[in-house]
Length: 268
Length: 287
Image 1 (cartoon, chains in turn brown, green):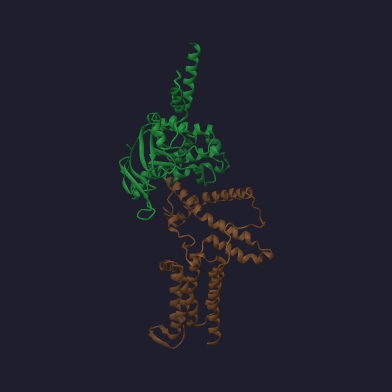
Image 2: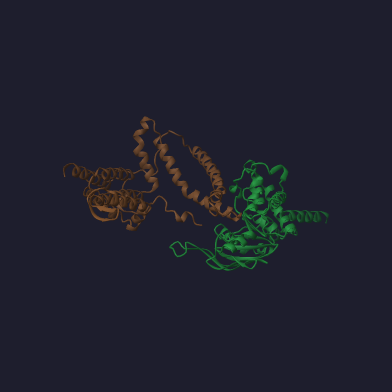
C-alpha cells in the first residue's frame, strides 16, 4: 500500500559532482542543443561527437549506470517496436529471406540509426533530470522563458505553477493513501471486479482527493498573499546562482559537439 | 471473544538503511464491550497499531487475533476481520464523496451487501446514534454541514456497518468543546446499548480519564502501561516519562494533596470533580 515508495519522483539522483553543481539553465540549454544535434545527424556515425560528450558527462556525474538503464526502461517497448519495423519493412535487396519476411542491409542500417537516436535522446534527458533537482529545473525554465515576458508571457508565474505542482505531488500521494485506507476500511473494493465496477470504485477516492486539493490550493493562496505575494511583482530568489567555470566547460563542450555534428553532415 | 496482540513487531522499510521499528513486541488484550484508550506521544506508534487491527498493515512478527481469527493477508480472513473492526480515521470528513448524507452513510453497508431494507434501517439508526435527525439530514449534501455535524456523519458512516469493534483515531480533534463531549457520550451510549467495543486513540487526557476505563499507553513502539486508566493517572512519574500530561482533575487532586488541603476531589471526570469540590466546600462552610 506504500504508494509513494513505488514512484521514483522527478528521477533526481542527488550528488555533488561537477555536473550536479553546474547551473540548471546551462544544463537545460545544453540538453536542448544536444537534442537538436541528434536530429541534425543523418548518419549513425555523425552521432559520435554527441555520444562522446554524453559519455564524458555521465562518467563525470558519477550517477550509477543502472539509473540510466532504468530511465530507458519506459521506452523499451517503443525502441523494440521501431527497430523491428525498420528491420523488416525497409525496402532494398534482401540479405536474408524467409517466406514473406526479409531483412535488408538498408533496414539494419536504419534500425541502428533509430536505435541510437532514441537512446541518445533519452540518456541526455535522464542526465539532465538526474543531476538537477526539480526546483532548479523550474527556475531554469523560468529563466529560459524570461525573454518572452516582454511579449506578455507570465514566465515567473508559469515557473511558480510548475514548482508548486511538483512540491505537492508527494503530499497528494500521501493524501491518496490516507483516503484509500479509509475507504477500504469502509468495505470498498478498489480495482476489483468488472471494468465498470473498477472504474466506479475510484470515485470514492477521486472526489475526496479533488475536494481536498481545492481546499489546499485555497489555503496556499491565502498563505502566500498573507506573506506578501503579488502576481506580477518581481521576486528575488533564495538560492542565487552565479556562473561558474565548469558552466563554461559544459557550454563549450556542447558547442563543440553540436558543431561537430553539423560540420560532419555538411562536409563529410 | 476479544482482540489480542501477541508480541507484534512492525518495521518500516524493512532491510533498508532507514529501517525503523514502529512497533516492538506489542502484546495487549481488548475485552468485548470495553471502552479502551490508546494514548502516547506523537510518533509512539498509535496509528500504526490501529492499522493492524483491521488488516491495513500486517505485523512483521507476532500475531494480531480478532475473535480467534489471526489477521493475515488472505482474502477470506481480511473480509471477516474488516467486517468486525471499523476504523474512523483522523479527520474522517475528508473522505466524503457522495451527493447526499444518505449515500455517504450507506456506502459501507452496501459494500457489505446489506439488503435495501437493512441499508435503510442501519443508516437511520446510525444517524440517530450520533444525534442527527435522519429526516432532516439524510437528503442534504455532506459538504454543506458544519464541522461538528460532518464529523458525526463520518462516524455514522462507520457505525452504520454494525461492526463489533469501533476504533476512532482522534475523533474529537478540531471540534468545539460541546461537540467533543457530545460525540464521546454518543460513543459511550453505543457501547452500552449495542455492546460495541470502543477503542479511542486520543491526545486529550481529560477525555481519556472521563470515558476510558482502561488504557494502553505506548512509548517508542512498546507498551509502557496497560490497565485501569485511574491507576495510570495516579502514577504521575509514569505519565511524565511517557510524555503525557495529567488530566485537569488529577492535577487539581494532586495540588490539593500537596498543599495539605482538606479538600478532596473525584478525579474520574471534570464534572464529578466539580461536584465533589462543591460538596467539600459547602461542608467546610457548614462546619
